[in-house]
Amino acid sequence: MSRGGAQLQQRTGLAAALMGDPEVLLLDEPLRSLEAGERARLLKLPGGRRTILLASRYPASEAGLMAHVALLRDGRVNLIAPIGALEQARLPLSHRGIAALAAMKPARAAAPA
Image (cartoon, rainbow, N blue to C red; front, side, top):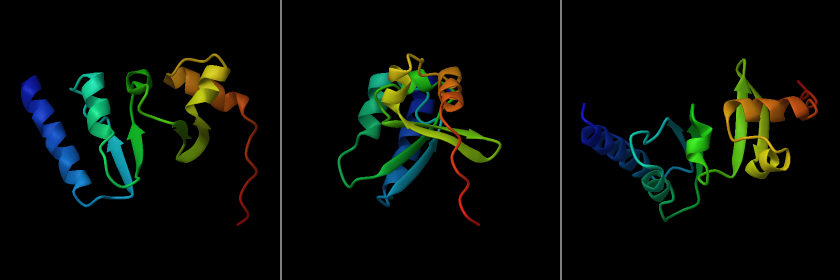
């Protein structure tokens, strides 16, 4: 598929996902074929407040689009932290940086069963 075709397909998919005005939207490698500025424009659409969970192999390319980072390991949430925590720890916005931040955070107490 051409780059233009991939862009159109990704935009159409995002539009279809947003039509129901969901409170939570899970996007896996969304809009990968678009430039960073275009991704930001499409993900910051006006309307109701919504939470967007953005899965990406390249977190640095999503800079400016997120308020928090999370790390899932072995099917469990290992870390949820504000994006500023990476900056404070002088860690890059990357998988290694996020994993290093998770290693620095104290382990959470287990929730009661």
